[in-house]
Amino acid sequence: MADESKGFRIRAATRGDMEQIVKLILRLKKLNEEFDPLLKVSEEASEDAEKTCREALETRKESYVVLVAEDKGRIIGVIMAELRRRPFYEPRVSGVITDFYVMPEHRRKKLGENLVRKASEELKKKGAGVIMAEFPFQNKIASSFYQKLGFRAVVGIFGKEE
Image 1 (spheres, rainbow, N blue to C red):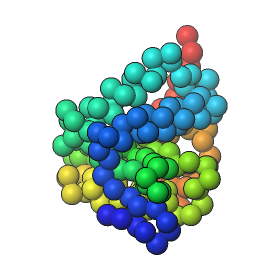
Image 2 (image 1 turned 90 degrees about the horizontal axis):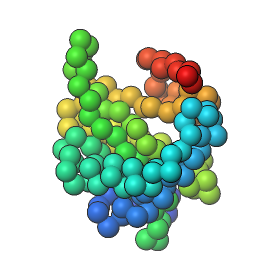
Image 3 (image 1 turned 90 degrees about the vertical axis):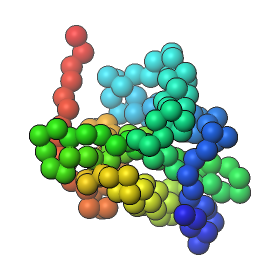
Image 4 (image 1 turned 180 degrees about the horizontal axis):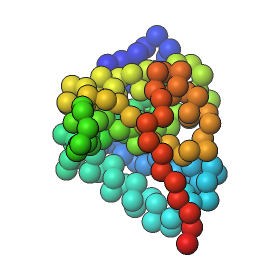
């Protein structure tokens, strides 16, 4: 699963990666907050990220795919996706990319594209018939990135603060 051609290696995440993964997920969530105030990061975000990561790597690993990109022993990117049932629709199972972050200095080097491609392959092996990605609606960079990879808008979620 390695891609040494660009100086990085993509591999399945392990429990030993949790601390670094949590830091990247928190960076992602803080970036999301910049796109929309309804995505304000909670004070418990660090604990929530750790719990989600532990669940994905240990207790429900059959339902998740977590990959990291590593450069000289340092994790420079992470992608986390989960299988979700799709009642009413075919295909009946989707693979949903929920968390995806690459360190800024490593962007525009095909790393993100390779992470998405490899995560998609792993999700398909676990039964996903369609791959989807969740990200803030206002994140036009993510929208453009996914469109270049062949993704298109499928559903919209709108919200308002009460």
